[in-house]
Image (cartoon, rainbow, N blue to C red; front, side):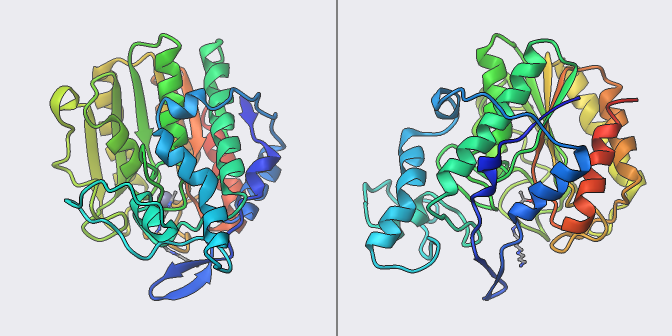
Length: 336
Ligand code: SP5
Ligand code: ZN
């Protein structure tokens, strides 16, 4: 399987994140990507396809914000990385404020996603990596892997959050649509619900979004991913949420993924994007499922067996020492 990664993705390295009321080490570290890269034996550098495919998903205001935020933060006299502290909760007017703290809250939904002077360049490279894998599949490969990092599925059209800045799965899916693929499906099997991906395609019938994730009644991102969220307008029925309880092991996860795959089969996509997170692993430091390393090849084979041309993009997974084996194991399920 072709694999893509750009070294520029490593330069985003926030020092700390707000966690349970204190600052702790940032969980989404460059070491994650390095561990995966070692385990899969390297990856090809993506071509640069420019900002067009990013702006096909994200708003110009938001892209400008990602580029400017670290500079505005520094100009306001702040040390360290930019982090929001005030948020315009649902119902606030869309004011044209330019104060850095107002912008951070307007374009971010949590305080765990710091922006550094290198965030834009790394997120841009992560998006190019997703696009390279997408074009490999559009050009005839059966499957390709994008070692995306920073990840993407918590990022919406105009907001960041959950360690995500640009929604790489959405950028991949939209690029496939723009290349003429009529129906594209996204299967999200990260531990967390992909709220950004859901929001981006919420009212659309051409991109089906199915997610297996920790019940948001108990777990981040809380406000999205409940089973009764099915899309709206033309998108009604093109969103499928399958929440699972803490402690979920292989049998329940696999059966639920089959449910998602059956719904995707009914949609009949020409291309599948898999948002793959290894934070479903039993030892993940911030998650509460109990999948084993041996489960990943099997879960991947269930996806592979459906026969859809498949782009795999990397999302979460924070047990750095186990990450390489878990990701390499998942990819091996596509080689069978
Ligand atoms: C892509 C992805 O998996 N994002 C996950 C975001 C989860 N954020 C909420 C949990 C924050 C836990 N912070 C742990 C800090 C450890 N130092
Ligand atoms: Zn996750």
